[in-house]
Image (cartoon, rainbow, N blue to C red):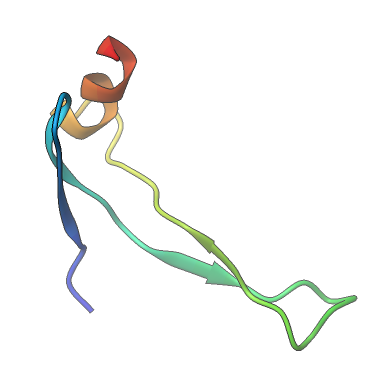
Length: 49
């Protein structure tokens, strides 16, 4: 699955990864995370908000 791209009205375009984790104590639930590449514009742009 390619990383999603999002356009935020103030931060601009963000390229995000995706990781999903299933907690061992809750096998029917999934936690989704959208990490960014360290040092990338997608990491620094949200800090300007």
